[in-house]
Length: 128
Length: 128
Image (cartoon, rainbow over all chains, first blue to last red; front, side):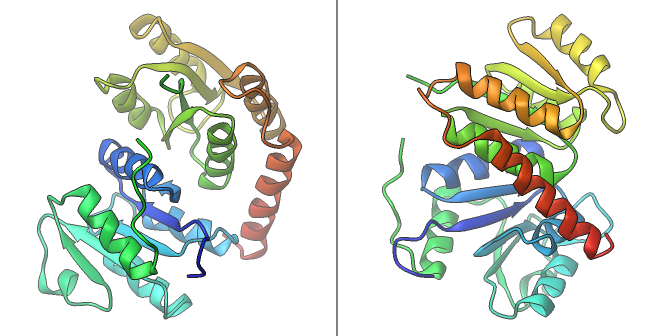
């Protein structure tokens, strides 16, 4: 992504406390974050014109579609969109797709640095 | 000084996300919940310290009225703002910004309203 632009991250996680934690930390790293709780909301947001430079999604979601199904749909829409999937109980399907897989539990700042690295953004000095 | 925390409860991500961004631009820390079950979890967070709850009066599932009553009973330190239609919600957000930690609003609340309306119109065009 172009130098100096704020990374826009779409976080898809149905566990609200974890979602809040990850989103807060991403904001501390200077990212714009959109939070959704299911794959359907993620697609609704993007299809309505919402922007994301990277999607970070749990595999197990409370809606009709899983994170893997979301990732496949996102691939169809935008082949170059960086996607990170995470799960505590990964199957080979979860871990071996056309995306990066992060096993739970994960170190949030470490994962954020991985995301920023993929986006070519200098890992910023956390704000707080 | 820690930014005051607003808990925004709104099911529709196309409404919630721009409103949350607007309040953040005004200097608030914003927690986002898609429903009252998520909002309850966020209110119970040990470091939650929610100062203001912003919730639509007639949401899906448990009504904002019922949740406001529950919040007043269990979290009396939290101010509750009930909103109505979209225009009302953005006006209430603007009122919050007026009283907020930043000295000025980042932009007119009508721009938030326009942004939300554009997103919702795009969703309707796609038939979702």
